[in-house]
Length: 549
Image (cartoon, rainbow, N blue to C red):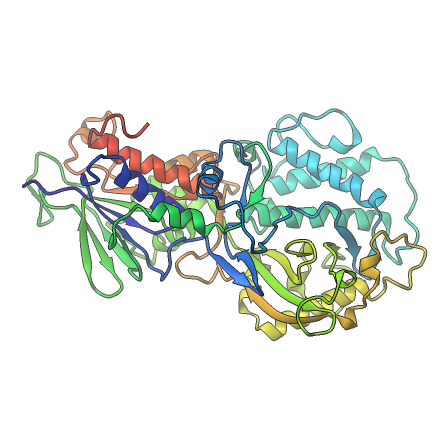
């Protein structure tokens, strides 16, 4: 009896389980392949990790369905009835409609101050993403047809836009009632607040590292952005549910992948290996090995970067230079979430609606300023918001990116509580005395920082987790969308060349995951599409016509 091709999928996240689901369900007998999914951790889901905190369902990893129009994630969630739940969940009421913007020192900023800069930033990002052409108005000054600056980064473009906005404005006088904040300092700090939010969207710790030209290749689905009330993990569990017991093997961390790029039909034996045997040997941490005909690698770009460095040998022999150079050039960053339960009296949940914590946008003095509140820690100063995870929730959420996100991972719960408390104090302590400032959020004025108690803390640690080493990918300056296409290419390559046709064991190593999709990188649906792509590649290779379209 001819042996079935063995396909080993490394990683039980969205990409890996989508590929496994497709390969298993695409043949009527479910028996075309010997299928194995190996996962280094003790759970499925990868960078999807639904959890609970203080009775609320939260997402430690992927959170949003980014546009419901055409999203496969939304389609699955709807089909399995995961969009309805009696249990409260993170962002169940979407984004805060009217957050309160507080500047360091306790000054609540009026919409007349915040909105023009917010509009400017939105227009600049819309232009960078190809959604908007310059209209000549003040809010779009600085938008040029080709980026028009020396450093081709989103960060440089945004700052050029802000400078052009200031140049286009006549003398508008100063704001009154904001202490030593000048008009320009406030506007720059509001702009920086939006930049810090963009850092969490993109995982680029510094927007000057984010490539400008590639930004407009990124695609979003139309329609609203929503969270999944039963949790993102419900989608993962649905994909895995069709697989027979034993297909998914947890706690199987891969150390080395041996492959054979030089085997050709003209050779029966190469490097001591029989060309008729399975060409890939996978080594695991426990010393065991597994042979495979094809391996679909779905590990994160961070793990690939670590595994293809000069001092590492994840692949033996090393991957060809076209792959390793793309891996090296692309960006991969860290984004972490911090959840805190707060109470005005230290006893847990809020006593009544009057005690609810407002949705805050936070504006800080720049690093070089002498006006900075000395007790606010540096790792809080690029946090753009502190908001309840839904209206009236006692759980607050802040997002961190870059070096601040990495610092968060090293801090104890006590250090976090002290740092956030000092920040809230620095933002609120001067609120009441400044009577000349119009306050539109009476709830915020009803409590003082000294009465707030943070009673529980939960944080994510994506940067230090060896199975991920970060959060998601971005196109860095010096890279391009072409590198994302290169990430998706299998080895050995198959194509039109005589050498490619001579390969006896093609498609030994295939690659899937969000960092392998040119237009939907950094998303769960990008990972989903990549898993389908590699499953279809193998189905086509084995002439399973009609099942992979």
